[in-house]
Length: 495
Ligand SMILES: NC(=O)c1ccc[n+]([C@@H]2O[C@H](COP(=O)([O-])OP(=O)(O)OC[C@H]3O[C@@H](n4cnc5c(N)ncnc54)[C@H](O)[C@@H]3O)[C@@H](O)[C@H]2O)c1
Image (cartoon, rainbow, N blue to C red; front, side, top):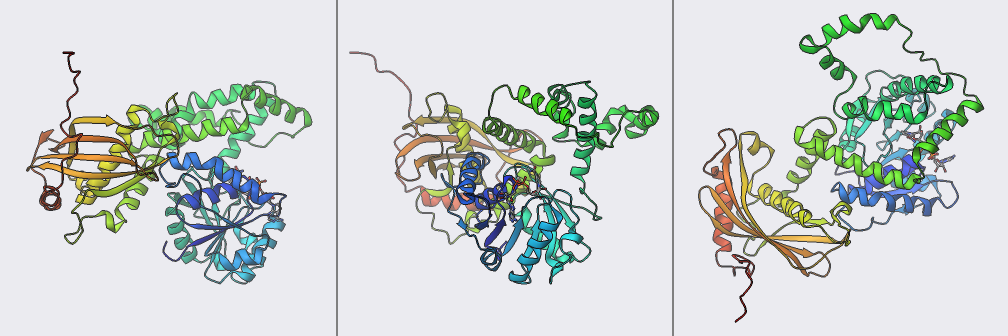
């Protein structure tokens, strides 16, 4: 969002630090504040821990996080920030007091959002002079990866505040869910809480361990939940007649004592059972190790869902399209200087691209070049709209030359040179360089065929893409052909 440059993060615990990392990776400046001891150092280490995941998901473009500004002065934070996200402990008196103070110093058009998990925004905004800009923006842990953000207005929040906040959260690649009616625990936590209360009863009654209950989710319903909620899942569970048959079959069970919902008394014995159960289930791995595994799994799940265009995969795909197409310089224009190889893409070596030698694996080079090809496609006008009409390029041949190793987190830049073109075929060469030293690391030469995807047949490149390609081709015809092009593998026989 053009007018939001600096985001104020008040309180930097689990959630505040997650916000700070996400906001930084998405290109905003951060001013943060927290009264805790060594809060600035702790925040920095939390951001550092989140950074590899943010590189992996493709948002962080630098090997280390940009610097943040930390202040002990709430007034300074409120006066500096263009958007404020409060993530203080879940306590209504404290939140109300903090919002009143933030509201006193922040310019009236600065949105002040609370990360609260379930408090009513009307109560949080009650003492503010400009309550119309106070709202709930409820995220999920880890905030730096999970897309969901519930937007809840209080009785005095203006609709414009929610609209503007939605634009901001979407600029963070989040999925915004407007809660239609102010209610405690909003939507997601209300559902989570029902499950949680049942789980506490089951443990309390000695029926199962925390490990059993986690298995009851992760091997079954949980796998579906990443892309189908309860309603869609049960709709399918009703066979061909869907939900109508499901209701007929399982409706009577609603009268059975299948759930209790009122939480059991939280006795010391129950707490001990839960804590011991969780420690046993952790199997000796630290919280940090589980966090790393969680982050990797979350990214891989979201990426897996991307080609299916569902749930969080759809959010990733939309964000990617918006981000890449909104970069004007990424779209060919007849006045562009295209006399040299095109510099359209940069990235960072993702942690997951590394093999046991601590270097990038062979397959990862292909993935990295895939993104460079994607940047070329967007530049010449092949985007979601073009593909939706049924046309695309398919790669038919690839040659890779591995030249120099590169390690996790190192910056990469790519150049692209066109070698050949006709009405259906495109022949090009990508070079991958180290972003700092400039060393040539790897090259690839590829032949692509333009296809009609429905007919599964080669077809002519559409005119606007062809115009861009022809302009680039005529500029690149005079460039020297790189030494790796047309390279043949052979071992000279000894003479
Ligand atoms: N943990 C979650 O899974 C989760 C998810 C979504 C939303 N939330 C919500 O986010 C908020 C923060 O939760 P958290 O899990 O990050 O808690 P946390 O305990 O990890 O962090 C709270 C932070 O607030 C700071 N703090 C304490 N007193 C303060 C004061 N007077 N003024 C300003 N800051 C103060 C603490 O130093 C700490 O850094 C809560 O409203 C919570 O309901 C939590």
